[in-house]
Each structure stands twice: as C-alpha cells, then as structure tokens.
Length: 552
Image 1 (cartoon, rainbow, N blue to C red):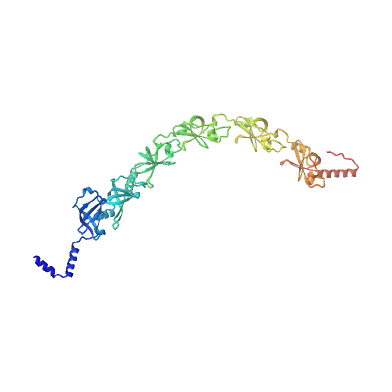
Image 2 (tube, rainbow, N blue to C red):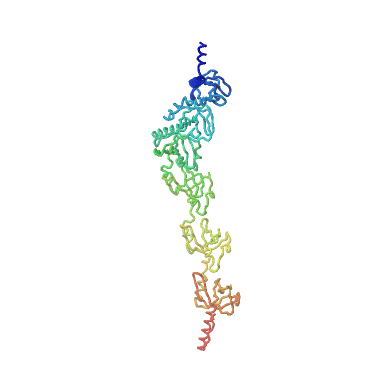
C-alpha cells in the first residue's frame, strides 16, 4: 500500500502538488467572522484561544465576566478578524463575537423601540457603560434621568430599563437612554392625573421648590403652584415664612387648566375665610387693638386677629406731626389702638387710623382763629421762605417772609427771630381742608406806603435824605422806613459821571413825587422836576409881582 502511495506521489509533478496543497488549505482553514475556539491557556490578564490556525489568538481577560468560570479546553465563540495576525497570532475578539451573536436582537429592539434591561458595569467620562444583551453600551449622562445629572451617581451592578436610541454595526456602537422611558412614564402619569383631578379636591404633596411668588408642590409627578397669596388669609412677605423644601403639605385644588397642564393650589382655602362678613365685625368708627406685624415706608400693618390685618397709613398717624416713617411712632410687636376708617371685604383690606383716636386740633379752627384776629404763638421752625408759628399743640401757622415787614427786605427769617420766641401776629387766611393758616406780622401796623400816598400823592413835594448812591441813581430815605428812588437823569448837579461824584450820604434833597407803584412798592422822585417847578413858580411870581412862600 505504502509503495503504491509513494509511486503515485513520485508521479505527481511539483505544479500538481502545489495546486493540491492550496485546495487543501483553502478547504480546511477557518473563515473570517464568527468561529468556535478552544481555550488553551488562561493567565491573569489574557486568555489564549485556538481557532484552528498555526497560532492562537489572544483575548483580554476583561472581556470575560469571570476568569474563575473558565477552564482549559472550554469552547468559546470569537470573531476572527485577521488570519495572519500581528506577531504571528490570530486576531480574534470576544466582544465582536458577542455583538454579532445578538445583533439581530439589538436591531429588532431598536426598530420596534422596545424596552431592554441594562446593568451598570463602569463609569466613563460623560456617562456610564451598561450591558445590554451582554454587550457594553453607552448611557450618556444627559440620558440617565429627566433632570440633567451633574455627577453620575449609580452603583455598579444597578439594573434598570432603557431604550436603544442609536446603533452602529460597523463601529459596534450602541447608545441607550433611560430618560426617554422616564419621560413617557411621567407623561402617562400626567395624563392620568389630569383625567382624574378636579377643582375642590384635597391632595397631599411635597414642597419641591420655593420662589418669591410661591411654592411648587409635587403632587406625584405633576407640579402644582401654590401662590403666596393663597398660602394664608393673612399677609406674608415670603413663602419661606410658612414652608420649606421637602415639607409634606395638604393642599386644595383651586384651578385646573388641562390644556396648558397647570394646577393652582391653595393652602388657606382649607380653613374658613376670616374675611367673610368682616364689615359686621369691624364697623367703621369702632376702636380696635392690634399688634404691629410690619412697617413699610407708607404705613404699618396691625394684626387684629389671625388672618386679619389692617393698614395704618403714615398720613393717618398724627394730627400734628409730619411722620416720614412709621418707626417714628411705633415698632414691630407693639400693641396699638386704632380707629376703623374703611373696610373692603372683597379686597381683604381694612384701613385704620391712629390720630382719629384723639381730638383733631384743627376742628372748628376757623372759629378759633378767624381772619383778622390777632394771635400769639411760638416760633417752632425757620425756613428760607418763612417762620412756622405754633398757636396751640398741633396747629401751626406760616408767617411768610414777605409778611414780616412793610419796608425791610428780609434775607432769612432767622435774621429776625429765634426758635422758641413768642410773637404776636395777625391771621390773614385759614384753610381747614388743607390745614393751613397764613399769618402776618407787618399787618399789625398800618402800611406806611398807604399813609405816604395819602400825604404825598403824585406831584407832591418832599424832602429825602440820601441813603445809598448807585451808578443809575440815588436812593433816599423818606421816613417811616420808606425809601424812594431818584434816577440819574432826574438829578440836577452837573459835571458828574456817577452820583457819588457830586452827592454824599445823608445829604438832604428837595424832590418831587413823579410815580408811585403800590404793587411793586416803588416811589420814584425827581430833583430836576422839583427845580423846574420852582423856576416856573418864580417866573409866575415875577410876572404878577407877588411873593410865593416855598412849601417844602
């Protein structure tokens, strides 16, 4: 037999032998792709697998769930990439084999948008690596939960449902999402919630977030808004005064907007409305007592009973004082008596007054201080425009700077008065509505201008004493505090560029009154007119031969 075989081999040419060998290798060598391999060696870091080639392939130990479960001779599925391989080794991959084996399941699950279980195997940058169908898949941080997670916080081995949202066979890449399932679950709960919910229902919820305008309450997947105005029948400055995050509260549904998915909640609505029939309880004019609970720039809030507060406006705090801020007359926590001024049940408002609890000093003020009456008072304040004179406690009159003197020009009342000085004035006008009384000091005496006008009407002759020299003329004193003005053109002395060249203070001048302006209180005089009139009279006297006595 052997001789026969040898005879056949010797008869085959080299070319025929090579052709037969190529056919043998082609028929017996493994194909690239999914193949069975036998474990021939196990180390701490790798596993050597024989796939029927001259050399073994190497699989990293981390590709296996547990090396302890492996034994020499075990058969495993691997993916053969390159028969030649680097360094004479076959290029094989267990991960690719695992991927190829379940690819049909992956594709079907992706196409039909099915749920699949995932298990956390390790943390990576930007998310987690999870096993789906035994294959490592990427779960981005943004797809872990509905709320974006700043830091991934899930224990290894944690299992949950996900949906495959992206696949790439060539790159052996699978991306999954847990968030889409949570959103669908939440949407289903929301739909169910709005189908069953109705106004007036009472539910329990957890305080999820607090803002300046209210609190958001988690009602079990659906958030409702508890507005600050619906927290208490009384007034609160901030929701945090009543609630804290994570508090469990019982609330009432007061409004449901199904289209916009909005729920308005109420806390105060669980208690009786203390404002009902409030007008009967707090009648206008009634005296009440309350605790100061808040001070603002415009007034103070008094708590009359739980849930009922009244406002004392700053203008209603005193008959006599100008209150700039309520803290000038009261402080938080203080018990205060007030009078009910107005009640508005619909708007939940009560207006109170402090000053109404004592008599108004301005009552019948027109009878007490009639126009023209002479009164005495104390200077309590000095301003650039006048002096305030206190007639009685709470009643002050204004002595305007223009009513202090008939003749003297007052720069500031402090030049005349000191605070605390008692003075006598005349009542010029009274306005009870505006709480104003106008006083006059100069009106206690007759107007010297009126007296002068009676004695020296326009055209009269008068003697004036030079009081002040000005470039445009001379001011002269006429007595009783009155001053008159002689324009430069009405002076008679010659050879002067200005009055002080020829005139001197205290010098007496013979003058004629040429104009009196009562409104402006101006008296205009002329030395020239006086001289000219004297000359006319002299000429008339000479023509008649009679002597005329000078009347100045």
